[in-house]
Length: 285
Ligand SMILES: CN(C)CCCNS(=O)(=O)c1cccc(Nc2nc(OCC3CCCCC3)c3[nH]cnc3n2)c1
Image (cartoon, protein in one colour):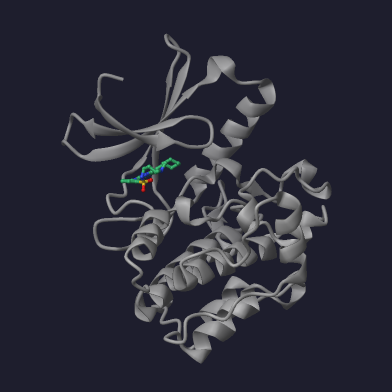
């Protein structure tokens, strides 16, 4: 562990504290998730191993880069080294605009939506390499399951980075047959999750719709004081109209992602085909 100099803590996420560190070899600033695995149950340790294995496979410009995992047996700590996103999280961007009563420009909303859709496309439809032949091959979809403004970060060049796969799941898991116990943030809970059915890739699309809606309205599409009221509102699926400065096209794409029926929501492929979403083809491979 002597390779990194510990700096200030950024906050505490799933499994542990996240701290800024400076790599001594080249002075590069990184984010380090510090997990005390003494307190972890066997199941949690398995989940952590699964998270690290998912992160290792996901290499994409819009997904927080996983650099390495270090085990400090002396202090029973696991350190996960990731790229540091100095632009902070999208939740702070939305909060700043709400406090100043300034709407987020439509171009910025499309840019964030495009980059998050590409990150989800990599999760849902990405390829991995066959060990023997090194040929690209389809892998099981990876569900983020906790897409929310607090898990979306910006780097120094306003590039969006989807982070904290602490709750993500690969559909290759045996328990995919059973509805996984929901552990995400209630505001972004999809209708099918409330009715205890299977969480699938369309549930990530619902959460993406919630995030894009919140960037425009500066508050989540469904708000309530109790979980019961929130669940009732989500199941009704009625959402406020967005501020009039936002275009018809943006309203249409947000409403398509917030369709109550998962089947009616677009896939990432369909979203990326939207003419308003300018995707450079190279990211589509
Ligand atoms: C608790 N909140 C008020 C947020 C306080 C902290 N502000 S903030 O908006 O996240 C913020 C401010 C400046 C830089 C960064 N950069 C950053 N943050 C990560 O995780 C943050 C962590 C995620 C789980 C919940 C707690 C916070 C990263 N993970 C991998 N690379 C990361 N880069 C984040």
